[in-house]
Length: 302
Ligand SMILES: Nc1ncnc2c1ncn2[C@@H]1O[C@H](COP(=O)(O)OP(=O)(O)OP(=O)(O)O)[C@@H](O)[C@H]1O
Image (cartoon, rainbow, N blue to C red):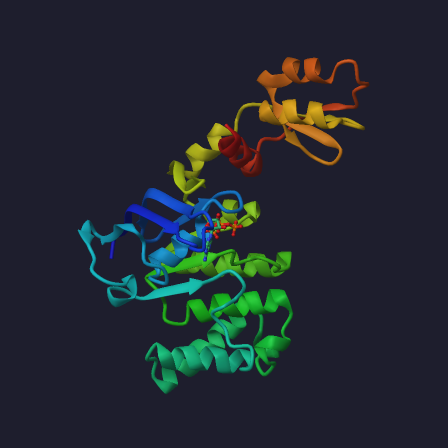
């Protein structure tokens, strides 16, 4: 497999009983390449999880289809290639099985032989740092450990397409690095990885391409280097105390990011921000290093 293409996917949740329908995705097109990680970014409710569910066949889209190497596929992607997935809330693991039993169970479901399964399970337990907790029930593992187990379960069959919805949520920094290193290995072996995450460090460490979803539509899709270059404009941070609601609204409309103690905004907004804040006493003004978080925020607020 060389490339998975998502073509014109739209999905509306129809709620009935007079409740308004929710348009989750509208005409989404993305190309996903083997051996690359594509990060799908978006604010809460942008449609990321819906897209992941559509790709792995859990949700039927209203329109649109998937293509493999340019050929439209019939039925679920899982019928055409090996697919692994981590869903929000670790729904891909069984709480009443131990970590080892979960891996053995899913290895059997995926058709691995007993001997292949044994080696693979041990390898994965080591890779995710759970070899000393292999006999603990999944339900008794910490949240971060459960998350690591969910990643291991998703890759048990060496997937050609791996879908990761928030794979490092709640995982400590050391284990984030372990997971990232393991996923990089998978990508080097040719797996096409689709990642959604609010953890920008993980996104920056892993991704080759970025697609930004906003209100169910693709706002931008490009190489991560091009994406990061967008953020090269200088950003300023200004500390303020006692910002009132009407000023906050005006600043929000200008695209200023309002934090607990400071405002963040691009250089070209500097004088407009000063005008809005006048005659307040202003705190320290510092120039911020531009990073993936600020680039993303600017993209969705633009
Ligand atoms: N089963 C459902 N029934 C009705 N509406 C839904 C359902 N699932 C999701 N939605 C709505 O669809 C929209 C997209 O939701 P989705 O979970 O795909 O967003 P998301 O980008 O993954 O958000 P988050 O970052 O919060 O996880 C939201 O408005 C959400 O409320």
